Image 1 (cartoon, rainbow, N blue to C red):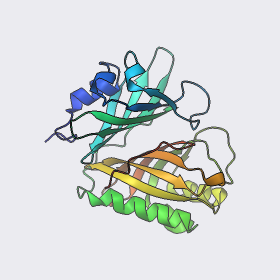
Image 2: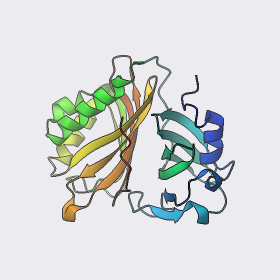
Image 3: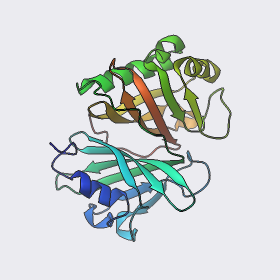
Image 4: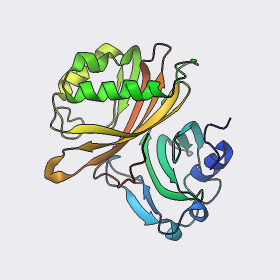
Length: 254
């Protein structure tokens, strides 16, 4: 069974999102594309353009992970040029007529390989359960419990932090649960909260999309994270992407 459901096949999704065919003809009237900035800090506001005004194709690449809910496709892929490699994620909402009604993407420098193959949990609720626990404990500043949601050998990559005790200017990657636990302490308690709106899982891999609420001046941020679960249901690979201000969402339920 195709993990992307009846709206798009994997090959068609890859063609649309990885530069092999034009996205605009598959979009509903009035659809806005929210695109990652081509330069500068990766958490900067998305560049928005009407699909009808978007000429050409998205940057060339390949898909690595794809998963869906009834109306939302979430993907991770790799884009390569002669000089650079980057990882991207995208969220695609599909309407009743199998047209794209919302598109958002994020990108960062570098490639984060998937771990060695693992059967992992097959229950569609497994990823939802562990990420809900992770964010609940993180927002409560229970950093021991938050770290326990990850495997001992986790790779955890985060975009430049905002509104925390970590002021490094670039993306940060943590290797191992103990190092991640120390990072949570350095990040410290925060005044904002995470809300996960969409969980899409395909076997041991999946992606989540959500919002960061409670930011200064009533603002909010948007994020997508790519996850790989180990055989015990812990997260062994976590690659996150964020932008601020956030991108409006039709709140597709899980």
